[in-house]
Image 1 (cartoon, helix red, strand yellow):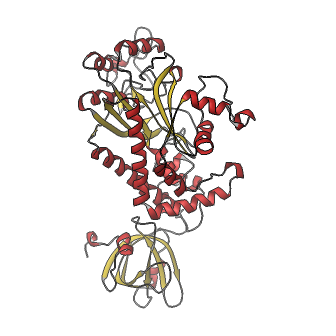
Image 2 (image 1 turned 60 degrees about the vertical axis):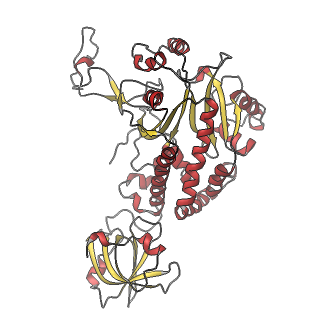
Image 3 (image 1 turned 90 degrees about the vertical axis):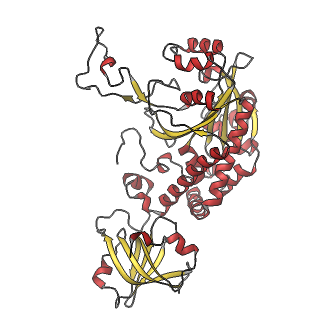
Length: 483
């Protein structure tokens, strides 16, 4: 039988094939035998559920069955029958089993027992075969699909922004350099500085930290675009929230002001999370149970008031609260945790940047709804954000979620050339190097806005995973570029 005529386990579970002869292929999760029969739990990644294969030693060679160890890959042809045991409607009585790939039980690391997440990160090439990571990456797929579907339905154009760039959109200076120069003996100029004129691009280049600036260029021609691609930060940060390589979703819209931007971001998040709730029910139910188990091991004050599924429904069913930074600061300054000095970062003066603990307090304790904070102090935000009339704040917004804090950051962009160049001068950003960006303000400028969503933060929120390294297939972090 052709390999392409196999039936996926998901389809076997969802449809009636009783009495039919079918072929399935997948990896052994467990095998158990008694004197009369061998039971094999098979999984092919299409569903979180395993499918039971029943093998009669009188039909199937016992030596072959002994090779059906955890991790081995099998091709099985047999008859679908009603299942005698509980847990599934049907099972396959095997007529023929072929070992496609053996797995030595003494060496295969993902045995059917509880493994720590740290151990599984060290075996990231095999961790997708576990229930947890199978669920995470199926959900990740659905979320990515929903992103494209949402923007396509809205008439946005998908733009591929460059991965290699000469700009640092965030002004962070924490970029990965791209070069073909001989690192042992780089060419130097008359000042003994590295001579990038001899490099491939004839100038210093780096991996992108954001597709936003290029996205703005396209929005000022196509009206509404979005980018969705990898971005890179050379930030030496070993936290549960940071990666050196991650994916960003960045829509940019001409003829949008700050309020339009907030409306789109709220609608977008509710759509994406609603899509996951509708299309990933089994995987989310499994991760909801997993998250509940994890919560039991936490101290009482660290436990979340909402379960995973409750958090997701919380976001889809509640209108987001919108407050200014100044209003948020007043609430935080007068809050019990601040007065009792419970915050790690006490709130005092106007202009303080809000930390995750403050953001979570606003969402989880004060409003008990998702929150959009607007009009941040100019001094703590990027050069491209539209300056408000008060001269102190900018038309920025952050969206805050339970359990995670900030999930989206965005702003109306500064379309006025004089205001933009003035701000760049204040921050020491070269206008010569950014000539192309300033050209959009010289030729047919228009009000426009946009936001950025770190895709892994979204996947983290939807799956309930506490470490961002567990929601990307092969995490890139300081000291780790394995696989």
